[in-house]
Length: 261
Image (cartoon, rainbow, N blue to C red; front, side):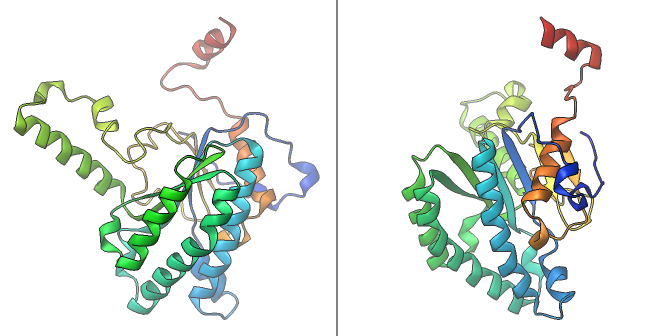
Protein backbone atom coordinates (compact mmCIF):
# COMPACT_ATOMS: atom_id res chain seq x y z
CA UNK A 1 0.00 0.00 0.00
CA UNK A 2 1.24 3.49 -0.83
CA UNK A 3 0.61 6.62 1.19
CA UNK A 4 -0.05 10.00 -0.37
CA UNK A 5 -0.47 13.07 1.79
CA UNK A 6 0.00 15.79 -0.79
CA UNK A 7 -2.80 18.28 -1.28
CA UNK A 8 -2.87 17.78 -5.04
CA UNK A 9 -6.43 19.03 -5.07
CA UNK A 10 -5.17 22.53 -4.33
CA UNK A 11 -3.45 22.73 -7.72
CA UNK A 12 -5.04 24.60 -10.63
CA UNK A 13 -6.83 22.46 -13.21
CA UNK A 14 -4.10 22.99 -15.80
CA UNK A 15 -1.43 21.38 -13.61
CA UNK A 16 -3.34 18.13 -13.04
CA UNK A 17 -2.91 15.64 -15.90
CA UNK A 18 -5.86 13.42 -16.74
CA UNK A 19 -5.70 10.01 -15.09
CA UNK A 20 -4.83 7.30 -17.61
CA UNK A 21 -5.32 4.27 -15.34
CA UNK A 22 -8.73 4.21 -13.69
CA UNK A 23 -9.33 2.13 -10.53
CA UNK A 24 -12.11 -0.42 -10.80
CA UNK A 25 -13.16 0.06 -7.15
CA UNK A 26 -12.77 3.26 -5.12
CA UNK A 27 -13.44 3.33 -1.36
CA UNK A 28 -13.75 6.63 0.53
CA UNK A 29 -13.92 7.75 4.15
CA UNK A 30 -15.82 11.03 3.88
CA UNK A 31 -14.24 12.89 6.79
CA UNK A 32 -14.51 16.54 7.79
CA UNK A 33 -18.21 17.42 7.57
CA UNK A 34 -18.44 18.56 11.19
CA UNK A 35 -15.24 20.62 11.07
CA UNK A 36 -16.34 22.19 7.78
CA UNK A 37 -19.51 23.44 9.50
CA UNK A 38 -17.73 24.53 12.67
CA UNK A 39 -15.26 26.57 10.62
CA UNK A 40 -18.27 28.50 9.35
CA UNK A 41 -19.90 28.88 12.76
CA UNK A 42 -22.73 26.53 11.73
CA UNK A 43 -24.20 23.42 13.39
CA UNK A 44 -22.40 20.18 12.51
CA UNK A 45 -25.47 18.85 10.69
CA UNK A 46 -24.97 21.65 8.13
CA UNK A 47 -21.70 20.02 7.19
CA UNK A 48 -23.33 16.61 6.82
CA UNK A 49 -25.95 18.11 4.51
CA UNK A 50 -23.22 19.77 2.43
CA UNK A 51 -21.47 16.40 2.32
CA UNK A 52 -24.47 14.85 0.59
CA UNK A 53 -23.95 17.29 -2.28
CA UNK A 54 -20.34 16.12 -2.57
CA UNK A 55 -21.51 12.52 -2.71
CA UNK A 56 -23.63 13.35 -5.75
CA UNK A 57 -20.63 14.82 -7.54
CA UNK A 58 -18.34 11.89 -6.79
CA UNK A 59 -20.95 9.36 -7.95
CA UNK A 60 -21.32 11.25 -11.22
CA UNK A 61 -17.54 11.47 -11.66
CA UNK A 62 -17.12 7.74 -11.04
CA UNK A 63 -19.80 6.89 -13.60
CA UNK A 64 -18.20 9.19 -16.18
CA UNK A 65 -14.65 7.94 -15.54
CA UNK A 66 -15.56 4.27 -15.75
CA UNK A 67 -15.14 3.33 -12.09
CA UNK A 68 -17.25 0.22 -11.57
CA UNK A 69 -17.62 0.19 -7.76
CA UNK A 70 -17.75 3.06 -5.25
CA UNK A 71 -17.87 2.36 -1.53
CA UNK A 72 -18.57 5.21 0.89
CA UNK A 73 -18.17 5.06 4.68
CA UNK A 74 -21.31 6.90 5.81
CA UNK A 75 -21.78 5.78 9.41
CA UNK A 76 -19.46 3.52 11.39
CA UNK A 77 -20.44 1.18 14.19
CA UNK A 78 -18.49 3.54 16.47
CA UNK A 79 -20.47 6.63 15.41
CA UNK A 80 -23.30 5.69 17.79
CA UNK A 81 -21.04 7.14 20.51
CA UNK A 82 -21.57 10.66 19.17
CA UNK A 83 -24.01 13.03 20.92
CA UNK A 84 -27.57 11.68 20.72
CA UNK A 85 -28.88 14.77 18.95
CA UNK A 86 -26.26 14.48 16.20
CA UNK A 87 -26.96 10.75 15.77
CA UNK A 88 -30.68 11.45 15.56
CA UNK A 89 -30.13 14.13 12.91
CA UNK A 90 -27.80 11.83 10.96
CA UNK A 91 -30.44 9.10 10.92
CA UNK A 92 -33.05 11.56 9.66
CA UNK A 93 -30.61 12.75 6.96
CA UNK A 94 -29.84 9.15 5.97
CA UNK A 95 -33.53 8.34 5.56
CA UNK A 96 -34.22 11.54 3.61
CA UNK A 97 -31.25 10.92 1.31
CA UNK A 98 -32.42 7.38 0.58
CA UNK A 99 -35.94 8.55 -0.21
CA UNK A 100 -34.81 11.47 -2.34
CA UNK A 101 -31.88 9.99 -4.24
CA UNK A 102 -32.86 6.40 -5.05
CA UNK A 103 -34.95 7.26 -8.13
CA UNK A 104 -32.11 9.39 -9.52
CA UNK A 105 -29.65 6.56 -8.91
CA UNK A 106 -31.95 4.11 -10.62
CA UNK A 107 -32.46 6.40 -13.61
CA UNK A 108 -28.70 6.65 -14.03
CA UNK A 109 -28.06 2.90 -13.81
CA UNK A 110 -26.57 2.86 -10.32
CA UNK A 111 -27.04 -0.22 -8.16
CA UNK A 112 -27.33 0.70 -4.47
CA UNK A 113 -26.22 -1.62 -1.70
CA UNK A 114 -26.08 -0.97 2.04
CA UNK A 115 -23.36 -2.90 3.87
CA UNK A 116 -23.28 -3.17 7.65
CA UNK A 117 -25.57 -4.28 10.46
CA UNK A 118 -28.79 -2.62 9.31
CA UNK A 119 -30.78 -4.30 12.12
CA UNK A 120 -29.75 -1.42 14.41
CA UNK A 121 -31.68 1.12 12.34
CA UNK A 122 -35.33 1.96 12.91
CA UNK A 123 -38.08 0.28 10.90
CA UNK A 124 -38.53 3.18 8.47
CA UNK A 125 -34.86 3.16 7.50
CA UNK A 126 -34.76 -0.63 7.16
CA UNK A 127 -37.84 -0.59 4.95
CA UNK A 128 -36.41 2.16 2.74
CA UNK A 129 -33.11 0.27 2.43
CA UNK A 130 -34.96 -2.82 1.19
CA UNK A 131 -37.01 -0.78 -1.29
CA UNK A 132 -33.93 1.03 -2.60
CA UNK A 133 -31.89 -2.13 -3.03
CA UNK A 134 -34.76 -3.95 -4.71
CA UNK A 135 -35.41 -1.09 -7.15
CA UNK A 136 -31.78 -0.81 -8.26
CA UNK A 137 -30.59 -4.43 -8.01
CA UNK A 138 -30.34 -5.00 -11.78
CA UNK A 139 -28.47 -1.78 -12.61
CA UNK A 140 -24.97 -2.19 -14.03
CA UNK A 141 -23.50 1.28 -14.65
CA UNK A 142 -22.01 1.58 -11.17
CA UNK A 143 -22.30 -0.33 -7.89
CA UNK A 144 -22.64 2.11 -4.98
CA UNK A 145 -22.00 0.58 -1.56
CA UNK A 146 -22.97 2.69 1.45
CA UNK A 147 -21.31 1.41 4.61
CA UNK A 148 -23.78 2.19 7.41
CA UNK A 149 -23.39 0.86 10.94
CA UNK A 150 -20.39 -0.89 9.46
CA UNK A 151 -17.05 -1.84 10.98
CA UNK A 152 -14.25 -3.92 9.52
CA UNK A 153 -13.90 -5.94 12.72
CA UNK A 154 -17.65 -6.63 12.66
CA UNK A 155 -17.37 -7.77 9.04
CA UNK A 156 -14.59 -10.26 9.83
CA UNK A 157 -16.36 -11.44 12.98
CA UNK A 158 -19.52 -12.21 11.03
CA UNK A 159 -17.49 -14.13 8.46
CA UNK A 160 -15.79 -16.17 11.18
CA UNK A 161 -19.16 -16.92 12.81
CA UNK A 162 -20.49 -18.20 9.48
CA UNK A 163 -17.49 -20.47 9.00
CA UNK A 164 -17.69 -21.67 12.62
CA UNK A 165 -21.31 -22.72 12.08
CA UNK A 166 -20.26 -24.70 8.99
CA UNK A 167 -17.53 -26.44 10.98
CA UNK A 168 -19.96 -27.23 13.80
CA UNK A 169 -22.49 -28.71 11.36
CA UNK A 170 -19.83 -30.87 9.77
CA UNK A 171 -20.05 -29.13 6.38
CA UNK A 172 -16.52 -27.75 6.70
CA UNK A 173 -13.25 -28.88 8.25
CA UNK A 174 -11.36 -26.27 10.26
CA UNK A 175 -8.19 -27.18 8.35
CA UNK A 176 -9.91 -26.18 5.11
CA UNK A 177 -10.43 -22.55 6.16
CA UNK A 178 -8.31 -20.27 4.01
CA UNK A 179 -7.97 -16.54 3.44
CA UNK A 180 -9.99 -16.94 0.24
CA UNK A 181 -12.76 -18.68 2.17
CA UNK A 182 -12.88 -15.87 4.72
CA UNK A 183 -13.06 -13.35 1.86
CA UNK A 184 -16.02 -15.22 0.40
CA UNK A 185 -17.97 -14.66 3.63
CA UNK A 186 -17.31 -10.91 3.94
CA UNK A 187 -19.45 -8.00 2.79
CA UNK A 188 -18.99 -7.26 -0.93
CA UNK A 189 -17.65 -10.78 -1.48
CA UNK A 190 -18.89 -10.72 -5.09
CA UNK A 191 -17.08 -7.48 -5.92
CA UNK A 192 -13.40 -6.68 -6.57
CA UNK A 193 -11.46 -5.38 -3.58
CA UNK A 194 -10.76 -1.62 -3.55
CA UNK A 195 -7.92 -0.46 -5.79
CA UNK A 196 -7.89 3.04 -4.35
CA UNK A 197 -8.75 4.18 -0.81
CA UNK A 198 -9.29 7.90 -0.23
CA UNK A 199 -9.67 9.66 3.10
CA UNK A 200 -10.47 13.35 3.29
CA UNK A 201 -10.16 15.63 6.30
CA UNK A 202 -6.47 15.25 7.15
CA UNK A 203 -6.55 12.07 9.24
CA UNK A 204 -4.26 9.26 8.12
CA UNK A 205 -5.86 6.01 9.27
CA UNK A 206 -8.46 3.58 7.97
CA UNK A 207 -10.60 3.69 11.14
CA UNK A 208 -11.98 0.13 11.04
CA UNK A 209 -13.15 0.51 7.44
CA UNK A 210 -12.79 -2.52 5.16
CA UNK A 211 -9.70 -3.61 7.11
CA UNK A 212 -9.53 -6.98 5.33
CA UNK A 213 -10.41 -5.71 1.86
CA UNK A 214 -7.88 -2.83 1.93
CA UNK A 215 -4.87 -5.14 2.29
CA UNK A 216 -3.41 -4.17 -1.11
CA UNK A 217 -5.24 -0.93 -1.82
CA UNK A 218 -3.41 2.26 -2.71
CA UNK A 219 -3.93 4.85 0.03
CA UNK A 220 -4.54 8.52 -0.68
CA UNK A 221 -4.95 11.10 2.10
CA UNK A 222 -5.86 14.76 1.68
CA UNK A 223 -6.43 17.62 4.12
CA UNK A 224 -9.46 18.74 2.12
CA UNK A 225 -12.65 18.48 4.16
CA UNK A 226 -15.31 16.31 2.53
CA UNK A 227 -17.76 19.11 1.53
CA UNK A 228 -14.88 20.75 -0.38
CA UNK A 229 -13.82 17.53 -2.14
CA UNK A 230 -14.86 18.60 -5.61
CA UNK A 231 -14.31 17.17 -9.10
CA UNK A 232 -10.78 18.58 -9.27
CA UNK A 233 -9.86 17.01 -5.93
CA UNK A 234 -11.20 13.63 -7.05
CA UNK A 235 -9.33 13.90 -10.35
CA UNK A 236 -6.12 14.54 -8.37
CA UNK A 237 -6.64 11.31 -6.42
CA UNK A 238 -7.20 9.37 -9.64
CA UNK A 239 -4.09 10.90 -11.19
CA UNK A 240 -2.02 9.92 -8.16
CA UNK A 241 -3.33 6.35 -8.44
CA UNK A 242 -2.60 6.30 -12.16
CA UNK A 243 1.10 6.94 -11.54
CA UNK A 244 1.63 4.09 -9.09
CA UNK A 245 2.94 0.61 -9.73
CA UNK A 246 0.93 -2.04 -7.90
CA UNK A 247 3.20 -5.00 -7.07
CA UNK A 248 1.16 -7.32 -4.81
CA UNK A 249 4.35 -8.71 -3.30
CA UNK A 250 6.31 -8.87 -6.58
CA UNK A 251 9.30 -6.71 -7.50
CA UNK A 252 8.97 -3.87 -9.94
CA UNK A 253 11.08 -5.82 -12.44
CA UNK A 254 8.70 -8.80 -12.22
CA UNK A 255 5.69 -6.56 -12.84
CA UNK A 256 7.31 -5.09 -15.95
CA UNK A 257 8.12 -8.55 -17.27
CA UNK A 258 4.51 -9.67 -16.73
CA UNK A 259 3.27 -6.59 -18.59
CA UNK A 260 5.52 -7.37 -21.56
CA UNK A 261 4.88 -11.12 -21.61
